[in-house]
Length: 195
Length: 389
Image 1 (cartoon, rainbow over the protein chains, first blue to last red):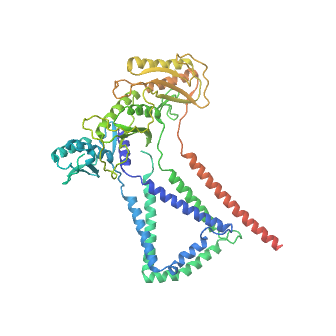
Image 2: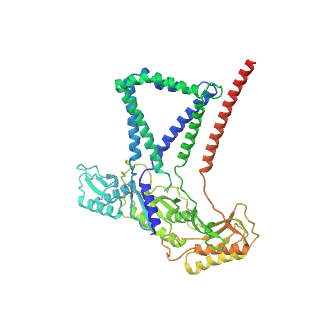
Image 3: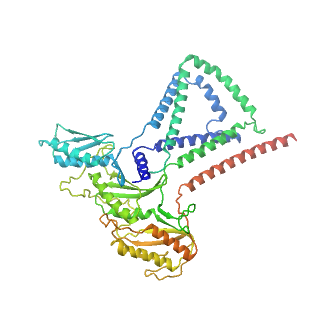
């Protein structure tokens, strides 16, 4: 594999497993566009001597200055805190990596991205096979580094824990995912009515 | 896979967050601390005086307005244009060209600058048709992206419930290997495995599998296969497309190309049969030529290739399909024998028109606004003049 292909794969895998933050960025841009359009419109209306849509530009400045008289102090503090908290949240979103629920497989001739739901579905089937249960009795949750397998045995029929652990661990190893998954098997004490 | 500028997205969000944080904190602190609140109230009248001084100091003709309002309008328009550019910058990165051999106008690496393009749909249709045969997939799609100048195929495989991603990957790798040998060159391929979306999913990563499958057979689902496919199915005819803006073909070129394909069909690959060369339907199946008219739509050459099962993943992987260098040489010879074969680019630019429409409408809006402002002030001046006289 040439170096350029390797770098293409690195770039694509990184981008496929992390959020582009496009949704929030586009929302913010659209809101800003609307605000700019409104300010522009108010300015134009003022220029041609038409009544303002909502507030004339001069009144905007005036009310910003007198807001401390017009509004109770508690409201001002609360509003300021809310705005600041929203700002902090937006900053956090802009800095966090924003992982998507996906893992990457080993890169060979091709590169591989697997959705966590596909992994969960496959592991659920593996565990159900090993325990001889209906796949509906197995619930798998995939985290960044963990695969939680939750098994609800049929009442009166104990399940072979070792068999499940071995089957699921083998299957996860076969995937060679990155970041790698640690399996955790959890078997319900209470059984459900068997299917 | 697209070329969204993610850094820009995050920068915009960070700046907005910072502004909100600063403004919010300033308001909260100013209101909470009694001294600053008093200062705020006292400062208000000074600021108001300064503002009205500024407004009277920047008159716009004798309309009674400040030209700062015009500046505000211009700033709003600029902001809108920049933000629209930003929004339309999201996504993109699709390409419809898989491979180009020769024909670079800057660095002519062929005697006459002839070139051959392989259209992205060749790969998309061929691989898509092969994937369609694979029972473990509910649906699949193949798309082509330009990743930093490298054409890259993305294969999205929607698996049925409970199918192992490893099995799917191995199968697709087999198809890709067959495709590599057909194309004669390796294009990066990214495989994305997603579950077939169907009801009953718990959360975003939890999935109780359905339909017990203890016999070990591969096919799990009984639901009808989703129709998100682009392949043409068995017997699809991938088309190698070259394009020229100015050319006349002669029969010699067409015969040569046919021979090369036929030759490869005999010696290179058992499964790849050379089909007749089609010049926009102007040559019949037996190669008998009818008058070839240069096509005003700039489409030049389609090499039909009948490919029944070369790409089913089981094919002889040693064969090479169309040798692109040979095809390029043929394009050169065709040009030499016929005089003129210049290859035009076949670019996809689906987003630009809408962007230009947006920008031009903004410009028109601004111009109309400004002219109405001028007209209004002129009318007012005329009124005043007539009253004065």
